Structure formats: structure tokens, C-alpha cells
Amino acid sequence: MSKTRAATPRTIKTATSDSDPAYLIAYREEMLARGLSINTRNAYLRDLRLAIRRTEKPLSDWLEYDIISYISSLQSDEVSSRTVARVLATFRQFFSWLEEIGIKDHNPCANIAQPKVKKPLPKSLSEDEVTRLLATISDATSDGNTLAIRDKAMIEVLYACGLRVSELVGLEFFEVNLTAGWLQITGKGDKTRLIPLGQYAQNALEAYLAVRHTLIPAGKKDCQAVFLTEQGGYMTRHNVWHMIKKYAKLADIYKHISPHTLRHAFATHLVNHGADLRSVQLLLGHKDLSTTQIYTHIANTRLQQLHEQYHPRG
Image: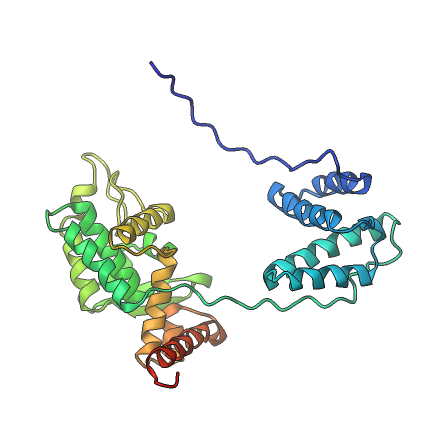
């Protein structure tokens, strides 16, 4: 008989090295004393050890020129701007500490400008991919499976309304008006917004609500959550993430996908079809219009791809 090992939480340990110079060992202890998280400490140590391996000059003796030269070497190796920015931030912290303890009389990073990090465009799904995803879920509901009916309603609502996953799992009955076809969502900063459901999402939601009671165990009091787990409680972000990954795989969609991907698809497809940014901002619940403007970049990128693909001189 095979033994079953008890599941234990995975513990992350600080990465130590016998080859660390004395000043780096002291800095490890300083980071621990400052209460920095294990992940942060390990990230700083990785960056500093890499710099130590790539130069013969002790890191504690580096001047501004050495740092600029090292950063330039990373950029020559086509290291991403995000990584370069992180390495420079690591150096700032390290040399600031050396200055505090009197090893350096000033921080050699003080006059080095932080490189600009280009914000990546959010991942989205094409309209065809969304159609395939929803068709796959519709197939799963054909035998009347309650969980599949719930899943279809959740994904239809996510895509039709552009909700954050926290807004979806926290959706309660007082926020749903099926007669008017609206959701009243309280988002970030406790700000309320009204979002139209659309016919497809409303039909899917009504079909789910007709069988929702079957998810409530006998003798358990009903909660106010619209979407329930098999145990009759609130869904979690993790539940939704796994559910979407499952159906994406069945639909042969292999790109990275999450609940937020459907929020991006909602906004991107609205802009692609001519919606004005102010309206999209209100529907998404963005505080600033500048946050919403990222979707114009996605639309422009798509237009450029279409031009290159189909224009004879693209």
C-alpha cells in the first residue's frame, strides 16, 4: 500500500550562497531586519549576484560610471526595459544602504534616470475566440448540467458587462434588475455604475436563476450571492479563473486567459465597433480616462495588422 503524504504549504526560503562577499551577507541581514518579504529579498539578491558575477570590481566600490556601463550591457543584451528598471531600483536600495553605514559617501545611482517602462498592451480575445468559448460552454449545458448553466451565465455576464472578477463573484440580488436589463455595480472606491446586460447575457442569467436553487444544500440558508458554488456559497476569484481556463482549453484557445481577459475583450470590441472612450470609461468604472485610452492603442494595433495583412502594399 502506498503512503499518502500530508499536504504541507510550500515554504519559500531566502536564497543564500557560500560565495557571497561579506558586504552582501551584511546586506542580507539588513533586508531581513527591515522586514522585507522573502520574495523581495531574493529578487534583490539575484540582481546583485548577477552583477557581481559579471564584473571583477567589488560591487561596494562601484561608481556612477560602473552602474551606467552595467545597465548599458544589459540593454545591449536586449534585456527588457522592465528588468533594467528593476535592476536599477535594486542598485538604488543597495547603495543607499552602503551610504547609510558609511561605506559610500554618496549614492552613485542618485543622478541616473530611471528608464521608462513601456506599459504592455492588455491581453484580449478576438471576437471569434469569444464566440468559440461561449459555444463550447453552450454545448456543456445541453444535458441540463446546473454548473455548466451557471458557468455560461457567468462568462456571458463577464463579457457583456466588462466586470472585474471581484465584482462578478460579489454580485448580489439587489444589484440585478432583470426587468430593466441592468446591473448596478459598486466598484473600486465604492463608486456605483449601471451596466446594460444585453439580451444574450440576460437570457443566460435567467436560465441559471431558474436552477440556482439546486445548488443550495438542504437545510442551508440561502446567501445573497447570485453565483453559487456547489456548496451554496460565494464563488472565489480562483473558482472563476479555473473555470475559464477549463473552457478555453476545450475551445482550443491556448493563449493565457483569465477573467480579466474577458474584461479587456469587452472594452476592445466596443472600441473596435466605434464606441466613444468616455462611454467605455463609464462602463468599465475607470476613474481616469487615461486608463481607458489603452484600448485605442489595441484598436490601432489591430488596424495596422489588418493593413499589413490585406493591403497590397502593406
